[in-house]
Image (cartoon, rainbow, N blue to C red; front, side):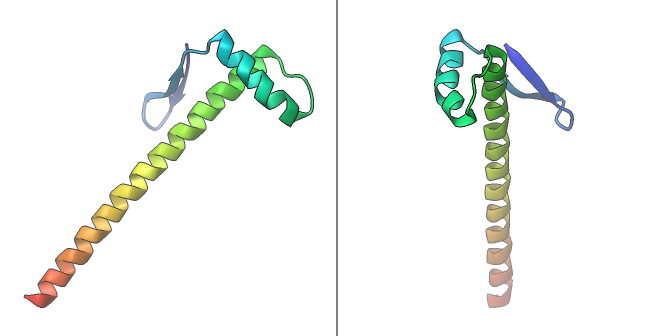
Length: 84
């Protein structure tokens, strides 16, 4: 299992159990894109880095949705005050 810590959250950013099948598939996909052979360690790093990347995208999306809900509530409250 590979764990990286988010210093701000004091909890794992991503926990991934990297299997040999995942490493092989990563090599199949990324070696042609990189233009050279990749080691199994580089494949493992790609898997972990992509997991971290998608975790941050999910956090960003959740924060964006929370802010949108907050703005809608604020707009509705302001509208209700003007109508009253």
